[in-house]
Image (tube, rainbow, N blue to C red):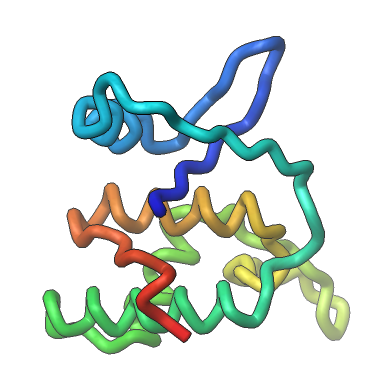
Length: 127
């Protein structure tokens, strides 16, 4: 099963990784497809988090960087920083992926895939 994340905006589907969906559609030309529409839900699940770290391990093996280095890099590239006042000082902190909902987290992983050219593995292969 392949998953593609999109948002509905003014009656149109907006895909984060439009090329990936277009490439996939060529492979299933003439076949019936099922579109499942879900409303945005709360924060990502533990299984989605585990899958993310497994994906980072795959990228780490391809690039020679650690999972933590990649995690920090991707947060800084794809998520807006947070500004907080701590001990009277305003500081800029990297955003946290824990605040992303399931759809946003899927979009985040799509961006990582586009940046690294390392395909997202089939989630069904992971417990």
